[in-house]
Length: 212
Image (cartoon, rainbow, N blue to C red; front, side):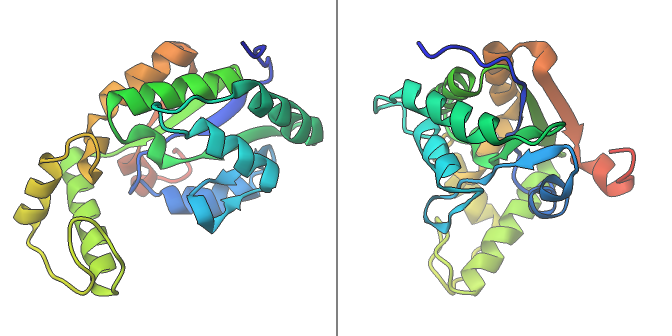
């Protein structure tokens, strides 16, 4: 197995719709003590560079496929830790890590632990009903501007009750899988240790940004 890395990395793992875009654009890249590695979202290429994209693509490999971890570890040590400026800590952000079924979450957490070693995990949560409402309006807005967004068709309007029902029919694949964030946090706690988990409230960020 790849050797553990002693350097502590920060991992922001979600949830979506908890000011993630603000954190990813206004805080993480501009913080003087953070080396922001970006966000991996496939072809949109928002990672810091090709090396980070290579690492993230491997880490997010579906559990049904075998992941070759040593090359990911080698690239991380050479191209990320090896280029760190003094006083900075690498941080990667992906709210997708808290979604999906238990098998996907566990595989991703274990891959992250194998490649990044000791990490501090950042989880931002919000009231479940507020999360559902926010996600519904996000999907509805996307549909109105002709973006493909499951389970609707571009340009369509859909009632919230219909959207929620469709999500409940796919508990491990749809947007509302993020509501099982307690299970996701437990998986990360088992992989990295309970003391490595930091849980923050979206409502506190809205109320008092400096305290957050």
